Length: 154
Image 1 (cartoon, rainbow, N blue to C red):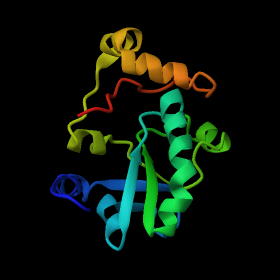
Image 2: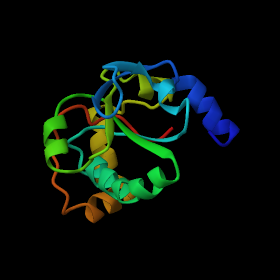
Image 3: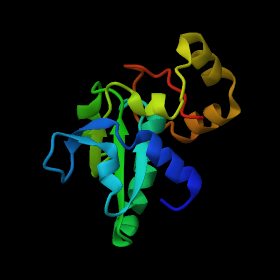
Image 4: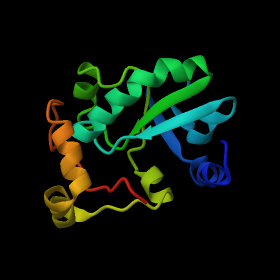
């Protein structure tokens, strides 16, 4: 981890246990901090596997994964619920390491908040950034199944 902010974040989440869904680890469950013991890691946290924005972001990140890996940078994604995982993988949105944090301990440790249904709908309807992102990803299939109320901002 390069700077104090990243180092502080890594300390907050290093002991959170996640489940391996796809990747090289022999262990079914591991502490997230073990992922960056020997190399730099890019950690991509997905809100929902069916989320159009999460799928589009995973596709964009996938474009540079080979370049990052050639620089010995490990790239992993972490989902927060199992719902929609099979469709996500079958759809080719992510081909790399994938883990699951069903207890949403990452979001809690990072102080990310659940907005609730009304705030989520309000954000979708009024937030210019969200509207722009949804417009840019209109070709990416998705669904509204699962808990989509988590905010990705701190």
